Image 1 (tube, rainbow, N blue to C red):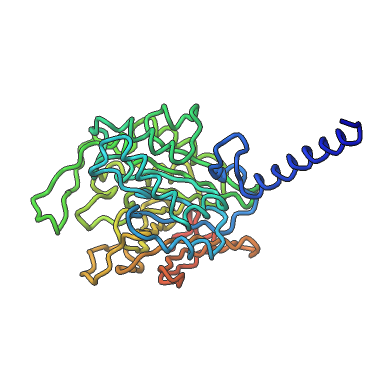
Image 2: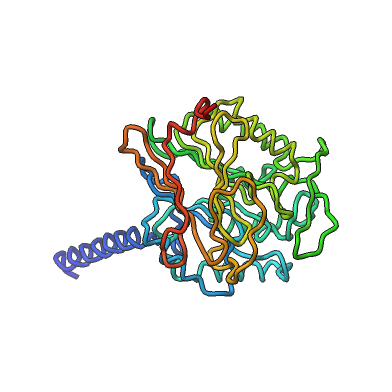
Length: 374
């Protein structure tokens, strides 16, 4: 082989490697893997967060057209609030759970979202492995491993070893920081007190036992540390509703001392910009209350991505309700207009067609101690 031919072969090989590298980057394919899409890690997200989409409750065996509508709003971040898959019934076998998660990943819209939008996720009872489950569920560790594998969580992640899969991230530069706090309301939660109701009415009544917990002491200490970090907007993710207290299903108000501790912690840390995002209920609503934090506490509930109620039903009691969407699949969107002198936050619920069904605009200055009128 002549020197000229060797140079040609070397050039073609190098060119091929460069082209493959660019293709792998564009498609987010790991050249060392078997061709599986890489997750878009939240840490690679830019410094300007304006649109955070979120949702919960997606049955993996049913179509999920809503992902296309979520992608259409071009979110900077997507938050899964829980029940992105249901492996809490009939999936006691590990292989069956892996297959269930594979169905979710095979959804075309969800696959596109994972390749193009950073994803943060918390589990609820669907991923946890036991309906309405808590600390008494003996097999939670194996279900945790499956959930974190699905997310692509590193093997040395603290989410795999500490008492819960709670996590937090801060995006953006000073003056435009968005903190995402993912609370684990399953791993440590004490048993709930059952009421004497028919199954269609509800299950639980408030229990003021001071020995019972939702977060566990380790997570409470961690949460206080997070609330003391600097941030302008704090989105606290809870699988179960925080503000609503009148219905008889899962909610923070089932353990009222824990709920009060949460509100007091926001007050004592003087954490500004707190907004709650919740799922679980298979409909959407916005609730608001004065929890003693010094400013109104909003809880925007979005549920479900394809598992919301499709027939009319009576409104549940909720003394704190601002607005509701009680029929139809939905997702949530938090939009932040940083360009205003007083940045404005828009809390939205959108339906499967992408239309806004609930919207509340809040000035950022409203979410700080002392903003409550007298």
